[in-house]
Length: 159
Image: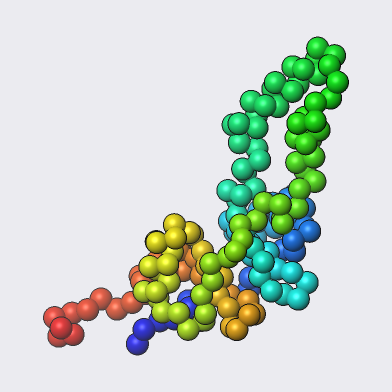
């Protein structure tokens, strides 16, 4: 018997809306001890995915260096630079501003080998599972590894 997405997926998927703030998303990730969430529109259709890495992107080294430069400009009494004003708006960004789209998904009938290949080939850590257009679960690399660990080890009699 080959396992499929519906056999190994996490069914209780935490999602966010496109207009949810970055701080709301970060709190959900922390509260649920997860590393990404699908972004769904009001109809429940998946429109993107947002991970911890995506949330960290605006706060990376390049932005830190620019911020230091902007702060130096401010200390010299120059006008507020447009780039500095953009930077201080970071906390107002929404899920839709940082999410990855389009989203790689699988149907609930996708097999374990198909999912493992997809995760490896696309260099992704999780894949939402759909039944038609409806989100019904998510499969992470940990789910795949767990399923492999639970598989019986073949013996010589099986060969």
